[in-house]
Length: 427
Ligand SMILES: *Cc1c(COP(=O)(O)O)cnc(C)c1O
View (tube, rainbow, N blue to C red):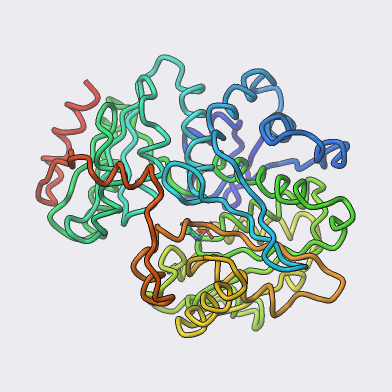
Protein backbone atom coordinates (compact mmCIF):
# COMPACT_ATOMS: atom_id res chain seq x y z
CA UNK A 1 0.00 0.00 0.00
CA UNK A 2 1.44 3.35 -1.02
CA UNK A 3 0.38 6.47 0.79
CA UNK A 4 1.14 10.14 0.30
CA UNK A 5 1.16 13.09 2.64
CA UNK A 6 -1.88 15.28 1.91
CA UNK A 7 0.08 18.43 2.77
CA UNK A 8 3.34 17.50 1.02
CA UNK A 9 2.32 15.02 -1.71
CA UNK A 10 5.96 14.43 -2.66
CA UNK A 11 6.34 12.52 0.62
CA UNK A 12 5.36 8.96 -0.27
CA UNK A 13 5.56 6.06 2.16
CA UNK A 14 4.68 2.39 2.51
CA UNK A 15 2.00 1.20 4.91
CA UNK A 16 4.70 0.03 7.34
CA UNK A 17 6.32 3.45 7.30
CA UNK A 18 3.03 5.31 7.69
CA UNK A 19 2.10 3.15 10.68
CA UNK A 20 5.44 3.80 12.34
CA UNK A 21 5.73 7.52 11.64
CA UNK A 22 2.06 8.34 12.22
CA UNK A 23 2.12 11.88 10.87
CA UNK A 24 4.01 13.15 7.84
CA UNK A 25 5.97 16.34 7.25
CA UNK A 26 4.26 19.56 8.36
CA UNK A 27 1.87 17.41 10.39
CA UNK A 28 0.32 16.15 7.14
CA UNK A 29 -1.95 13.10 7.17
CA UNK A 30 -1.17 10.06 5.04
CA UNK A 31 -3.73 9.04 2.43
CA UNK A 32 -3.85 5.91 0.23
CA UNK A 33 -2.53 6.56 -3.29
CA UNK A 34 -4.92 3.95 -4.68
CA UNK A 35 -8.33 2.80 -3.55
CA UNK A 36 -9.19 -0.02 -5.93
CA UNK A 37 -12.71 -1.34 -5.35
CA UNK A 38 -13.02 -4.92 -4.09
CA UNK A 39 -13.81 -7.45 -6.78
CA UNK A 40 -16.86 -9.28 -5.45
CA UNK A 41 -18.51 -7.52 -2.54
CA UNK A 42 -21.54 -9.84 -2.47
CA UNK A 43 -19.28 -12.86 -2.00
CA UNK A 44 -17.32 -11.03 0.70
CA UNK A 45 -20.51 -10.26 2.57
CA UNK A 46 -21.18 -14.00 2.85
CA UNK A 47 -17.92 -14.60 4.78
CA UNK A 48 -17.43 -14.53 8.54
CA UNK A 49 -16.14 -11.32 10.13
CA UNK A 50 -12.51 -12.36 10.59
CA UNK A 51 -12.09 -13.94 7.14
CA UNK A 52 -13.82 -11.03 5.39
CA UNK A 53 -11.81 -8.44 7.36
CA UNK A 54 -8.56 -10.26 6.52
CA UNK A 55 -9.43 -10.20 2.83
CA UNK A 56 -10.37 -6.51 2.87
CA UNK A 57 -7.21 -5.52 4.74
CA UNK A 58 -5.00 -7.70 2.55
CA UNK A 59 -6.56 -6.07 -0.54
CA UNK A 60 -5.78 -2.62 0.88
CA UNK A 61 -2.34 -3.25 2.35
CA UNK A 62 -1.12 -5.28 -0.64
CA UNK A 63 2.05 -7.41 -0.76
CA UNK A 64 3.73 -5.68 2.14
CA UNK A 65 2.14 -8.35 4.31
CA UNK A 66 1.17 -11.88 3.32
CA UNK A 67 -2.48 -12.92 3.60
CA UNK A 68 -1.53 -15.31 6.41
CA UNK A 69 0.11 -12.52 8.37
CA UNK A 70 -2.88 -10.22 7.95
CA UNK A 71 -5.21 -13.01 8.99
CA UNK A 72 -3.18 -13.70 12.14
CA UNK A 73 -3.20 -10.01 13.00
CA UNK A 74 -6.96 -9.73 12.46
CA UNK A 75 -7.56 -12.85 14.55
CA UNK A 76 -5.52 -11.38 17.39
CA UNK A 77 -7.16 -7.95 17.14
CA UNK A 78 -10.84 -8.63 16.48
CA UNK A 79 -11.63 -10.99 19.32
CA UNK A 80 -15.11 -9.74 20.18
CA UNK A 81 -18.50 -9.71 18.43
CA UNK A 82 -20.08 -6.80 16.51
CA UNK A 83 -23.82 -7.38 16.81
CA UNK A 84 -26.35 -5.54 14.65
CA UNK A 85 -29.57 -5.19 16.64
CA UNK A 86 -32.99 -4.28 15.32
CA UNK A 87 -34.44 -1.25 17.08
CA UNK A 88 -37.48 -0.72 14.83
CA UNK A 89 -38.63 -1.94 11.44
CA UNK A 90 -36.23 0.26 9.47
CA UNK A 91 -33.54 0.95 12.06
CA UNK A 92 -30.63 -1.13 13.36
CA UNK A 93 -27.96 -0.44 15.98
CA UNK A 94 -24.39 -1.53 15.23
CA UNK A 95 -22.84 -2.26 18.62
CA UNK A 96 -19.13 -1.45 18.49
CA UNK A 97 -18.58 -1.61 22.24
CA UNK A 98 -17.99 -5.26 23.06
CA UNK A 99 -14.21 -4.94 23.25
CA UNK A 100 -12.09 -4.71 26.41
CA UNK A 101 -12.55 -0.96 26.93
CA UNK A 102 -16.19 -0.87 25.87
CA UNK A 103 -15.82 1.56 22.97
CA UNK A 104 -15.20 1.31 19.23
CA UNK A 105 -11.64 2.61 19.68
CA UNK A 106 -10.68 -0.95 20.62
CA UNK A 107 -10.87 -1.98 16.94
CA UNK A 108 -8.35 0.59 15.75
CA UNK A 109 -6.06 0.40 18.75
CA UNK A 110 -5.88 -3.40 18.72
CA UNK A 111 -5.15 -3.65 15.01
CA UNK A 112 -2.56 -0.90 15.32
CA UNK A 113 -0.86 -2.84 18.13
CA UNK A 114 -0.64 -5.88 15.85
CA UNK A 115 0.81 -3.76 13.04
CA UNK A 116 3.49 -2.19 15.22
CA UNK A 117 4.39 -5.56 16.69
CA UNK A 118 4.82 -6.94 13.18
CA UNK A 119 6.76 -3.99 11.74
CA UNK A 120 9.00 -3.42 14.75
CA UNK A 121 10.23 -7.02 14.51
CA UNK A 122 12.95 -7.19 17.19
CA UNK A 123 13.34 -3.48 17.79
CA UNK A 124 12.08 -2.10 21.06
CA UNK A 125 9.29 0.47 20.92
CA UNK A 126 8.03 2.81 23.61
CA UNK A 127 4.53 4.16 23.16
CA UNK A 128 3.94 7.43 24.98
CA UNK A 129 0.47 8.90 25.02
CA UNK A 130 -1.56 11.43 26.98
CA UNK A 131 -5.20 10.74 27.65
CA UNK A 132 -8.23 12.43 29.10
CA UNK A 133 -9.68 8.96 29.60
CA UNK A 134 -10.78 6.78 26.71
CA UNK A 135 -8.01 6.68 24.13
CA UNK A 136 -5.36 5.82 26.70
CA UNK A 137 -7.46 2.92 27.94
CA UNK A 138 -7.87 1.50 24.45
CA UNK A 139 -4.14 1.85 23.76
CA UNK A 140 -3.12 0.32 27.10
CA UNK A 141 -5.35 -2.73 26.61
CA UNK A 142 -4.40 -3.13 22.96
CA UNK A 143 -0.66 -3.33 23.73
CA UNK A 144 -0.95 -5.25 26.98
CA UNK A 145 1.44 -8.20 26.99
CA UNK A 146 2.97 -7.47 23.58
CA UNK A 147 6.67 -8.26 23.66
CA UNK A 148 9.23 -5.51 22.99
CA UNK A 149 6.62 -2.76 23.24
CA UNK A 150 6.33 -0.70 26.40
CA UNK A 151 3.49 1.73 26.92
CA UNK A 152 3.49 4.83 29.11
CA UNK A 153 0.15 6.62 29.52
CA UNK A 154 -0.05 10.05 31.16
CA UNK A 155 -3.33 11.37 32.54
CA UNK A 156 -4.33 14.31 34.70
CA UNK A 157 -4.59 13.24 38.31
CA UNK A 158 -8.13 13.46 39.68
CA UNK A 159 -9.56 14.61 36.36
CA UNK A 160 -10.78 11.32 34.97
CA UNK A 161 -13.53 9.20 36.48
CA UNK A 162 -12.64 6.52 39.02
CA UNK A 163 -13.97 3.85 36.71
CA UNK A 164 -11.98 5.16 33.75
CA UNK A 165 -8.86 5.08 35.89
CA UNK A 166 -9.51 1.50 37.04
CA UNK A 167 -10.02 0.44 33.45
CA UNK A 168 -6.42 1.04 32.36
CA UNK A 169 -4.35 1.68 35.50
CA UNK A 170 -4.73 -1.85 36.87
CA UNK A 171 -2.97 -3.76 34.07
CA UNK A 172 0.74 -3.78 34.99
CA UNK A 173 3.28 -5.79 32.91
CA UNK A 174 4.38 -3.60 29.96
CA UNK A 175 1.82 -0.87 30.74
CA UNK A 176 2.96 2.01 32.95
CA UNK A 177 0.39 4.64 33.90
CA UNK A 178 1.29 7.98 35.41
CA UNK A 179 -1.05 10.40 37.16
CA UNK A 180 0.35 13.86 36.46
CA UNK A 181 -0.31 16.48 39.10
CA UNK A 182 -1.78 18.91 36.61
CA UNK A 183 -4.29 19.07 33.74
CA UNK A 184 -4.62 17.33 30.38
CA UNK A 185 -2.80 20.10 28.51
CA UNK A 186 0.22 19.61 30.77
CA UNK A 187 0.17 15.88 29.94
CA UNK A 188 0.08 16.66 26.24
CA UNK A 189 2.89 19.12 26.57
CA UNK A 190 5.06 16.50 28.32
CA UNK A 191 4.42 14.11 25.45
CA UNK A 192 5.40 16.81 23.00
CA UNK A 193 8.63 17.53 24.88
CA UNK A 194 9.53 13.85 24.71
CA UNK A 195 8.94 13.77 20.94
CA UNK A 196 10.99 16.94 20.51
CA UNK A 197 13.95 15.27 22.25
CA UNK A 198 15.54 13.57 19.21
CA UNK A 199 18.22 11.54 21.08
CA UNK A 200 15.63 10.24 23.52
CA UNK A 201 13.22 9.46 20.71
CA UNK A 202 15.89 7.40 18.97
CA UNK A 203 17.16 5.72 22.13
CA UNK A 204 13.80 4.37 23.28
CA UNK A 205 12.01 4.02 19.89
CA UNK A 206 9.31 6.51 20.73
CA UNK A 207 5.92 6.21 19.02
CA UNK A 208 2.63 7.97 19.77
CA UNK A 209 -0.06 5.45 18.70
CA UNK A 210 -2.35 8.39 18.19
CA UNK A 211 -5.72 8.55 16.58
CA UNK A 212 -4.64 9.69 13.13
CA UNK A 213 -2.62 6.52 12.50
CA UNK A 214 -3.64 4.94 9.19
CA UNK A 215 -3.71 1.43 10.71
CA UNK A 216 -6.63 2.47 12.90
CA UNK A 217 -8.65 3.76 9.99
CA UNK A 218 -8.21 0.69 7.83
CA UNK A 219 -9.26 -1.51 10.75
CA UNK A 220 -12.44 0.48 11.19
CA UNK A 221 -13.45 -0.08 7.57
CA UNK A 222 -14.12 -3.72 8.47
CA UNK A 223 -17.08 -3.21 10.75
CA UNK A 224 -19.00 -1.24 8.15
CA UNK A 225 -18.91 -4.35 5.96
CA UNK A 226 -19.99 -6.42 8.94
CA UNK A 227 -22.99 -4.14 9.50
CA UNK A 228 -24.27 -4.57 5.95
CA UNK A 229 -23.46 -8.30 6.01
CA UNK A 230 -25.81 -8.75 8.95
CA UNK A 231 -28.75 -7.10 7.15
CA UNK A 232 -31.05 -9.45 5.25
CA UNK A 233 -30.08 -9.41 1.54
CA UNK A 234 -33.38 -7.77 0.58
CA UNK A 235 -32.54 -4.73 2.76
CA UNK A 236 -29.03 -4.03 1.52
CA UNK A 237 -29.68 -1.66 -1.36
CA UNK A 238 -30.82 1.56 0.35
CA UNK A 239 -28.62 1.69 3.43
CA UNK A 240 -28.12 4.96 5.31
CA UNK A 241 -25.51 5.01 8.10
CA UNK A 242 -25.44 7.61 10.87
CA UNK A 243 -22.07 8.18 12.55
CA UNK A 244 -21.62 10.06 15.84
CA UNK A 245 -18.57 12.16 15.03
CA UNK A 246 -15.81 14.00 16.88
CA UNK A 247 -12.46 13.74 15.12
CA UNK A 248 -14.22 12.16 12.10
CA UNK A 249 -12.02 9.06 11.94
CA UNK A 250 -15.04 6.81 12.14
CA UNK A 251 -16.82 8.57 9.27
CA UNK A 252 -13.61 8.54 7.21
CA UNK A 253 -13.48 4.76 7.60
CA UNK A 254 -17.12 4.48 6.50
CA UNK A 255 -16.49 6.57 3.40
CA UNK A 256 -13.44 4.42 2.59
CA UNK A 257 -15.61 1.29 2.92
CA UNK A 258 -18.09 2.82 0.49
CA UNK A 259 -15.26 3.68 -1.92
CA UNK A 260 -14.12 0.05 -1.80
CA UNK A 261 -17.58 -0.98 -2.97
CA UNK A 262 -19.74 -1.36 0.12
CA UNK A 263 -23.30 -0.46 -0.88
CA UNK A 264 -24.12 2.59 1.27
CA UNK A 265 -26.54 5.12 -0.13
CA UNK A 266 -25.64 7.95 2.22
CA UNK A 267 -23.87 8.83 5.47
CA UNK A 268 -25.06 11.19 8.18
CA UNK A 269 -22.37 13.05 10.15
CA UNK A 270 -24.04 13.53 13.54
CA UNK A 271 -22.41 15.85 16.07
CA UNK A 272 -23.09 17.59 19.36
CA UNK A 273 -22.89 21.41 19.48
CA UNK A 274 -19.23 21.19 18.51
CA UNK A 275 -20.51 21.45 14.96
CA UNK A 276 -17.64 22.82 12.88
CA UNK A 277 -18.27 20.25 10.13
CA UNK A 278 -22.09 20.55 9.88
CA UNK A 279 -21.74 24.33 9.67
CA UNK A 280 -19.04 23.95 7.05
CA UNK A 281 -21.24 21.64 4.98
CA UNK A 282 -24.05 24.23 5.05
CA UNK A 283 -22.05 27.40 4.54
CA UNK A 284 -18.74 26.39 2.98
CA UNK A 285 -16.98 28.34 5.75
CA UNK A 286 -14.53 26.57 8.06
CA UNK A 287 -15.06 28.41 11.34
CA UNK A 288 -14.14 26.40 14.45
CA UNK A 289 -15.44 27.84 17.71
CA UNK A 290 -14.05 27.16 21.20
CA UNK A 291 -14.79 23.58 22.23
CA UNK A 292 -17.83 23.15 24.49
CA UNK A 293 -18.26 20.38 27.06
CA UNK A 294 -21.29 18.18 26.32
CA UNK A 295 -22.90 14.91 27.43
CA UNK A 296 -21.29 13.19 24.44
CA UNK A 297 -17.83 14.22 25.56
CA UNK A 298 -15.85 11.93 23.24
CA UNK A 299 -17.18 14.19 20.47
CA UNK A 300 -16.17 17.47 22.11
CA UNK A 301 -13.86 18.38 19.27
CA UNK A 302 -13.98 21.65 17.34
CA UNK A 303 -11.01 21.03 15.02
CA UNK A 304 -11.58 17.47 13.84
CA UNK A 305 -8.19 16.07 12.93
CA UNK A 306 -9.32 13.54 10.31
CA UNK A 307 -11.37 16.00 8.25
CA UNK A 308 -8.59 16.67 5.68
CA UNK A 309 -8.79 12.98 4.73
CA UNK A 310 -12.49 13.29 3.93
CA UNK A 311 -11.85 16.37 1.80
CA UNK A 312 -9.07 14.51 0.00
CA UNK A 313 -11.26 11.47 -0.65
CA UNK A 314 -14.00 13.62 -2.18
CA UNK A 315 -11.43 15.51 -4.21
CA UNK A 316 -9.72 12.46 -5.72
CA UNK A 317 -13.03 10.69 -6.38
CA UNK A 318 -14.59 13.88 -7.82
CA UNK A 319 -17.45 13.72 -5.37
CA UNK A 320 -19.36 16.63 -3.85
CA UNK A 321 -19.34 17.21 -0.09
CA UNK A 322 -23.05 17.99 -0.47
CA UNK A 323 -23.57 14.19 -0.67
CA UNK A 324 -22.92 14.10 3.08
CA UNK A 325 -25.89 14.61 5.39
CA UNK A 326 -25.39 16.16 8.81
CA UNK A 327 -27.20 16.85 12.05
CA UNK A 328 -26.42 18.69 15.28
CA UNK A 329 -27.81 17.98 18.75
CA UNK A 330 -27.81 20.08 21.92
CA UNK A 331 -27.56 18.34 25.29
CA UNK A 332 -31.31 18.80 25.88
CA UNK A 333 -32.04 17.17 22.56
CA UNK A 334 -29.59 14.38 23.38
CA UNK A 335 -31.35 13.68 26.68
CA UNK A 336 -34.74 13.60 24.96
CA UNK A 337 -33.34 11.29 22.28
CA UNK A 338 -31.88 8.90 24.85
CA UNK A 339 -35.33 8.72 26.48
CA UNK A 340 -37.13 8.18 23.24
CA UNK A 341 -34.71 5.44 22.24
CA UNK A 342 -35.18 3.77 25.63
CA UNK A 343 -38.96 3.82 25.14
CA UNK A 344 -38.42 1.99 21.87
CA UNK A 345 -36.75 -0.74 23.88
CA UNK A 346 -33.09 0.13 23.32
CA UNK A 347 -30.74 1.24 26.09
CA UNK A 348 -28.17 3.61 24.60
CA UNK A 349 -25.79 6.33 25.73
CA UNK A 350 -25.37 9.94 24.55
CA UNK A 351 -23.11 9.35 21.51
CA UNK A 352 -25.24 6.60 20.01
CA UNK A 353 -28.46 8.48 20.85
CA UNK A 354 -27.29 11.46 18.80
CA UNK A 355 -26.66 9.22 15.80
CA UNK A 356 -30.01 7.44 16.25
CA UNK A 357 -32.06 10.65 16.50
CA UNK A 358 -30.54 12.17 13.38
CA UNK A 359 -31.07 8.91 11.52
CA UNK A 360 -34.73 8.63 12.56
CA UNK A 361 -35.40 12.19 11.48
CA UNK A 362 -33.70 11.90 8.12
CA UNK A 363 -34.55 8.36 7.01
CA UNK A 364 -36.69 8.06 3.85
CA UNK A 365 -39.60 5.61 3.54
CA UNK A 366 -37.71 3.18 1.30
CA UNK A 367 -34.41 3.33 3.22
CA UNK A 368 -32.78 1.09 5.84
CA UNK A 369 -30.98 2.87 8.65
CA UNK A 370 -27.98 1.83 10.73
CA UNK A 371 -26.61 3.97 13.55
CA UNK A 372 -23.27 3.33 15.21
CA UNK A 373 -23.24 2.72 18.95
CA UNK A 374 -19.72 3.78 19.80
CA UNK A 375 -19.71 3.14 23.56
CA UNK A 376 -21.34 0.83 26.10
CA UNK A 377 -23.99 2.61 28.22
CA UNK A 378 -22.02 1.67 31.36
CA UNK A 379 -19.16 3.79 30.10
CA UNK A 380 -21.39 6.84 30.63
CA UNK A 381 -23.05 5.31 33.67
CA UNK A 382 -23.78 8.45 35.67
CA UNK A 383 -25.31 10.48 32.84
CA UNK A 384 -27.35 7.53 31.56
CA UNK A 385 -28.63 6.78 35.08
CA UNK A 386 -29.47 10.42 35.64
CA UNK A 387 -31.29 10.94 32.38
CA UNK A 388 -33.21 7.67 32.35
CA UNK A 389 -33.69 7.37 36.12
CA UNK A 390 -32.52 3.77 36.13
CA UNK A 391 -29.74 1.76 37.78
CA UNK A 392 -27.16 0.36 35.40
CA UNK A 393 -25.12 -2.71 36.14
CA UNK A 394 -21.48 -2.75 35.13
CA UNK A 395 -20.52 -5.43 32.64
CA UNK A 396 -18.75 -8.26 34.45
CA UNK A 397 -15.28 -7.55 33.07
CA UNK A 398 -15.44 -3.95 34.23
CA UNK A 399 -16.93 -4.81 37.63
CA UNK A 400 -14.01 -7.19 38.25
CA UNK A 401 -11.49 -4.60 37.16
CA UNK A 402 -13.00 -2.00 39.49
CA UNK A 403 -11.94 -4.23 42.42
CA UNK A 404 -8.25 -4.29 41.42
CA UNK A 405 -5.63 -1.99 43.02
CA UNK A 406 -4.42 1.06 41.06
CA UNK A 407 -0.85 0.67 39.85
CA UNK A 408 -0.22 4.25 38.69
CA UNK A 409 2.83 6.26 39.57
CA UNK A 410 2.25 9.89 40.39
CA UNK A 411 4.46 12.88 39.75
CA UNK A 412 4.64 16.56 38.94
CA UNK A 413 4.45 17.84 35.36
CA UNK A 414 8.23 17.84 35.06
CA UNK A 415 9.93 16.58 31.92
CA UNK A 416 13.13 15.46 33.63
CA UNK A 417 11.16 13.05 35.85
CA UNK A 418 9.31 11.71 32.84
CA UNK A 419 12.55 11.27 30.92
CA UNK A 420 14.05 9.20 33.73
CA UNK A 421 10.95 7.04 33.80
CA UNK A 422 11.01 6.51 30.03
CA UNK A 423 14.65 5.44 30.14
CA UNK A 424 13.94 3.05 32.99
CA UNK A 425 10.86 1.54 31.34
CA UNK A 426 12.60 0.92 28.02
CA UNK A 427 15.87 -0.39 29.50
C1 LIG B 1 -13.92 8.71 19.81
C2 LIG B 1 -15.42 8.57 19.99
C3 LIG B 1 -16.35 9.14 19.07
C4 LIG B 1 -15.92 9.99 17.91
O1 LIG B 1 -15.27 9.25 16.92
P1 LIG B 1 -14.36 10.01 15.84
O2 LIG B 1 -13.74 8.92 15.04
O3 LIG B 1 -13.37 10.81 16.62
O4 LIG B 1 -15.29 10.87 15.04
C5 LIG B 1 -17.69 8.89 19.26
N1 LIG B 1 -18.13 8.19 20.32
C6 LIG B 1 -17.29 7.65 21.23
C7 LIG B 1 -17.85 6.91 22.38
C8 LIG B 1 -15.91 7.82 21.09
O5 LIG B 1 -15.08 7.30 22.01
